[in-house]
Image (cartoon, rainbow, N blue to C red; front, side):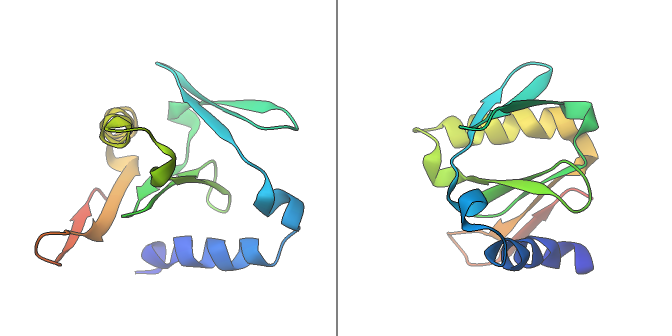
Length: 115
């Protein structure tokens, strides 16, 4: 149960941090063996097998690099059908460490996958 509260707690914790961090824009590059995240400060590489967990909600993907730190990816930032492609790609790479939880837009029921 606590696991599903983590994204909300992460956002609350971020809202109390430095505005520079909150206002920075990250660029996410999904390669075959690694994820590269870059911004105006620099870039970092994360092999998929080293990511702690990926959590997908209706509007965001939370890319956890450990149990307390995550990058938030706004799905609205993807072009066209890229969201579904990235979601499918990450599901393949992460296996059971990829969790999906959001309401089905058609019937309003909550969808759960993973773990």
